Length: 303
Image (cartoon, rainbow, N blue to C red; front, side):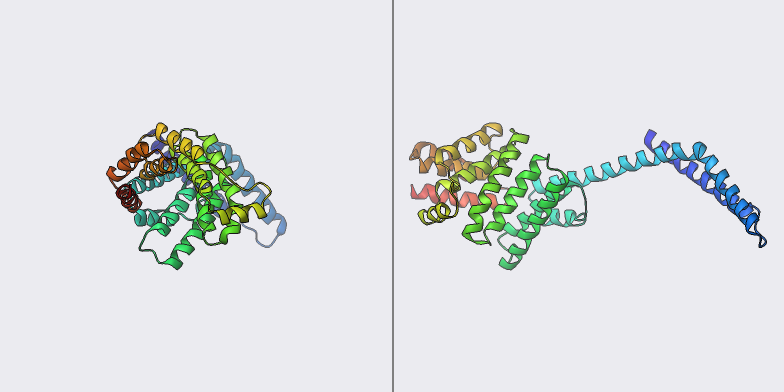
């Protein structure tokens, strides 16, 4: 209420100042052809108008600028709240429709969420292949913009790394391996900025798992291209998956699945059975959850 009263007062002051300036303009002596009279008239109007500024202007300026900042922040907060609700509800297409209206935003929080929404659209099974590619590259562009706006945000680094990884699927093995160093760097940055973010820990686990199971021919390519190619182990992957689960138990169906798969790789069938069963029985909210349940069930049936 106090803020609204301040804004009303500010508007009244603006109207008063505007009225004073218009009266000065129309009532000041008009020139009848003599330049000296005209210049004196202009000087008189300008000088008197500026003399009113300390009375009307500065406090008005402060009130309006402060209320504008508060209003803009409130508007952004409302957008982010709506976006996070839709994301949590698995409403991928509605989320994109909301954020696409703000694609010209300079706010990193809006931009990385738009990158995530585009990426999620690309992951939907009914999205045509050519559209998937377009959405994947668009997602990376918005993630880049978010990184430029706010490199201190852990979510920005996380989604920038995810989007680079997705683009690598369209650019061949050489680019994908080269990008691996950048991806790991940004996942690590996200973890450094927020060690309690379970998703960043999970994604670093995925990175480790991917390079632990890299096929021999890809290893040979990597060895030719880089003096120290990216590499990891299943033990390292397991540590990150377990850390993610410790930070936020049962937060993500895919983390449960990969805990089971990693234990399988390490020949620990008892623990693999435990985590795969959890992945299968976890309530599904998204299309990805359903895919995870299906994969977990297939592995369990094969054991």
